[in-house]
Length: 332
Image (cartoon, rainbow, N blue to C red; front, side, top):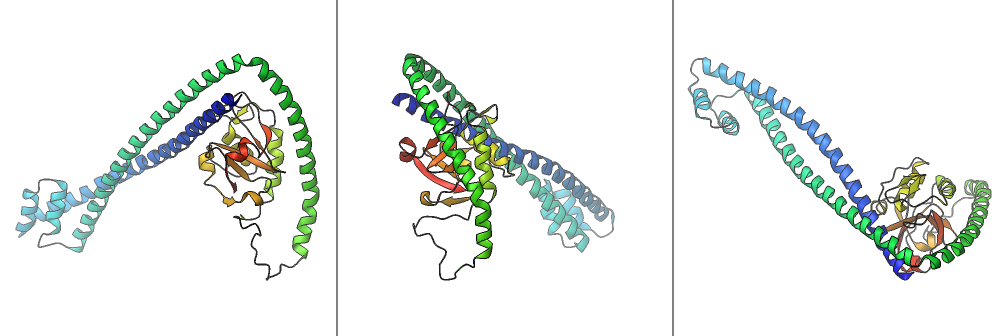
């Protein structure tokens, strides 16, 4: 079973690496779309500015005594050269200066956006390759896992029966804890509004750890919502009641209370505020295994999560393997 656990850990990290590459790719594609639209606008603006400059040069050429302007027209080898020559000509009015400024500005903007688009296209191509590599890794590990589980089928059935009984007990404990929290909430609100805060308290945690801002009221709802999906099968890349992976479950649950999170445990660790383990509150996000796994803390040293392929959304304790691979927590 230790071999299965190691494989599940490796598989979950691969899934979250795939999810992170997907998040990045979506950002790059959105940036590509916006930059492409702006490039077209800049090209149109440059075209209009060039037309205005051409009209001004023709006017200078056809007027009397404009030998310096004639030199500008005949000697330029490119648009940049033309702009530079025209800019240093002896006779230049405020109108000429404005037209020149517009041509130079839009020309520079077009060039800069073309460079950004080139880089973004290269980044998108690299991310597509990265996702393809992670997908191949996931599929290969899934095949290995299926073969391994087949060889220890009897042991698996026994452990599943034990886990089912344990989950039933944990659900009862969680239901009692949530009910108690809901009963205490009105009293806590009345207490906080009636009692003045002493200025001598300093507001610091006695544990010495990082204390995040107080959990928002929606956190109690987060736990209740997550509880609804206990027993939902793990599906890698899943983010709906038909199946979740670890970050997909967190993203979906928080979306129900109006909080948008990325579908990646690595990205989710960058959200909210850090919280020390001693200050964990229900609704905080807890991270494990080098940020390759995430769950929702529910109190009592336990959390709800979608563990790995072949399992379901369940309650686990921050002990054993989870305690040894614990990374940190965030309060959203």
